[in-house]
Length: 100
Image (cartoon, rainbow, N blue to C red; front, side, top):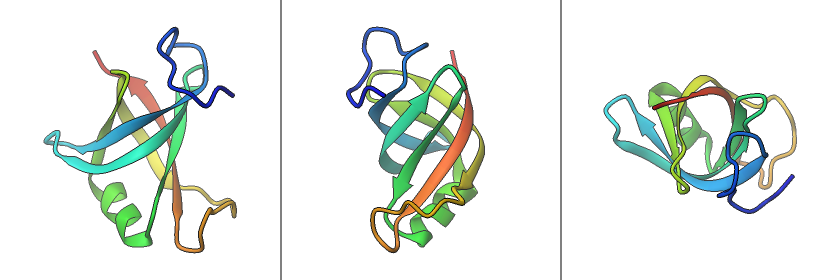
């Protein structure tokens, strides 16, 4: 997987990008580093605490990457895996569909 932002072909290659999670009113909820898998229309990001994860899960509607991709978040959920970078960090995964 390419770990740098993908400016050449975001529709096909897996990549990471700084992103903003937005609520239904387009208000920012969190700044994250999103990892996206466009061929599968899925991705994930980390949040530092369970409280942050709960707030984002309750209100998140879309995600906008630094390189301009805007996606609707579908099935946002806590990852059941045990690959946390710290004891409190929460990994959220999602499916998505591109917007506009």
